[in-house]
Image 1 (cartoon, helix red, strand yellow):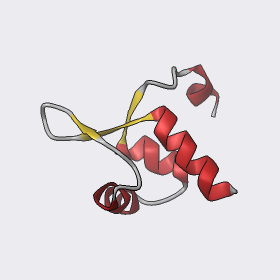
Image 2 (tube, helix red, strand yellow):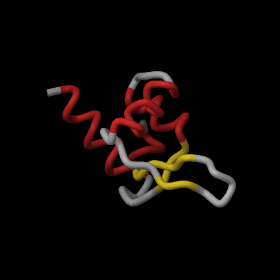
Image 3 (cartoon, helix red, strand yellow):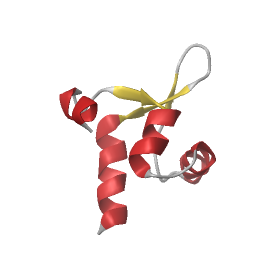
Length: 64
């Protein structure tokens, strides 16, 4: 968690990091992206990246 605290909230994180923060599988994060629950941007290579701020917000909503 110390590494996350050092990141800027606008930082883009890969799907594995997002899944780890949220405590779910990468497949779940992909599904949530398809459902519009979590927005993703794509790299030129087609990989998903998630804004850390959005991931943390979703984690906060699920914890409430």
